[in-house]
Length: 145
Image 1 (cartoon, helix red, strand yellow):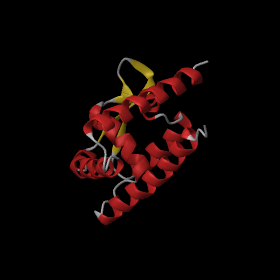
Image 2 (image 1 turned 90 degrees about the vertical axis):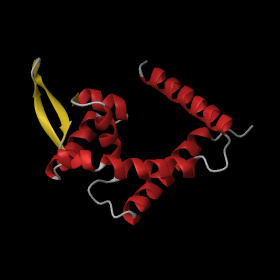
Image 3 (image 1 turned 120 degrees about the vertical axis):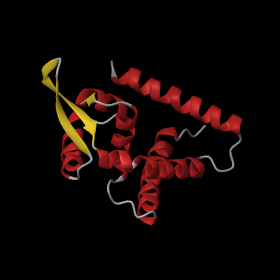
Image 4 (image 1 turned 120 degrees about the horizontal axis):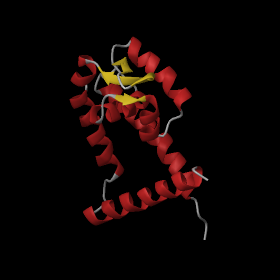
């Protein structure tokens, strides 16, 4: 049996990133890129959030986040706020500009989901999501060792 799951996941990631960027471009959405969209998505669901929390929810390293957040702050999408409970921590929150972009992002995200699961039945979609979640959990467990 020729197992290629890791290679397929890598190829899917690269392809989906390119397609996402193309859809953003076709929709004339230039306020953020695909990678920044992942951060916005988390913030739309949970803000304010610490850098550590954002890193955990996006799977990105804190060092990677710093540069991304710097660019997003310069673009007027996020603000840094001091944590009132722990002065050593900084929290991230969205600006009004970022909130206005949520609907456009969700439309692009819905389009990506339709592309991902074209030709799948509801049962197959549920199975695929369950399998991917299990792989994700396996990798997180291994990373923690």
